[in-house]
Amino acid sequence: MESSRAKRPNQELERWCTVGGHTFRYLVTGSGPPVILLHGLLGFSFSWRRNLEALSQCGTLYAVDALGAGYSDHPCPMDCGLEAQAERILALMDALGIDTAAVAGNSHGGAVAMLMAGLSAARGRQRVTRLLLADPVHPWADYELPQRVLIDFPPALGIFGPLLLKSKLLQIIFLRRLYGDPRRVTEETIEGYTEALHQARTLEYGSGVVKSWRHDLRRLEVLSRKISDIPAMVFWGTEDHALKIESAARLCQVFKQCEFIPLPGVGHMPMEEAPRLFNPAAKRFLLSACPGGHC
Image (cartoon, rainbow, N blue to C red; front, side, top):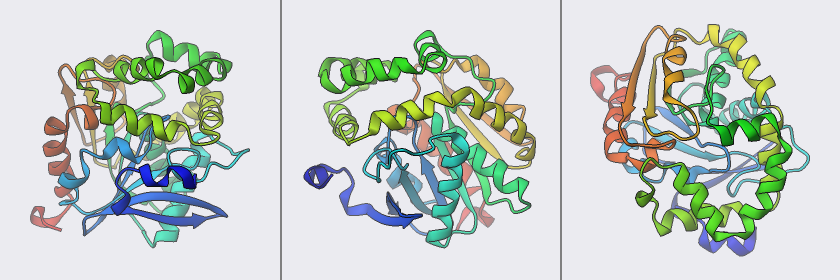
């Protein structure tokens, strides 16, 4: 990992924290109440680069590279299931002295965020104060065909993954599919993601996540009844080619207070593809937790 450290994005914001013998890399900026930012599968904190400046006005941001992703440690073997990942982020909160936090999550990170809330509620100590979800994976999600193949036939990632790592063309195609308008995928975006993908054992992490996908979401469905009192904001790109927007309505029914924001022409990563639409609404939601809108 040392050889790629000169190329790490947002290096001036990064911090390191060892929990349970493994080291997390995370970015920190801003001041005030803590806000934890969780990325999607095969992403890392880089996914939030276009939101850090705006959302840092709402609190202290912690954009985390999950263990096995980005520039955090990549232990192997490792339990990559949702519950294990949620527990690791809660343990990271403990190590950083964070009692409660608003949690934002995109895609798989959205499912981790909700499970963090469900697990802590089940223990009688709710540690997630707000949920800001961007095209999140959830138990009632409806997937496009490529995603269904990966989920229902986990070895597919083991077959496709090495090809993805070796082919710049496949990397570009993969990233463009995540955007509603592929023309918005810049060279900086491609380079940022592909550099991190080459970290050792990234594919093993991805395969581990996919392997337990269905089982993990059944667990989240059971715990979802415990998170209904948490205020939520749900963004969804209307051109999401991974998770169909039609499933968003069922997710929103989980929460007593839920604002749903569809983003026309945007894909699976709205905070990255359309920050000018995402940031003002996300900022309003996070600041509404503070008296008078000031923290």
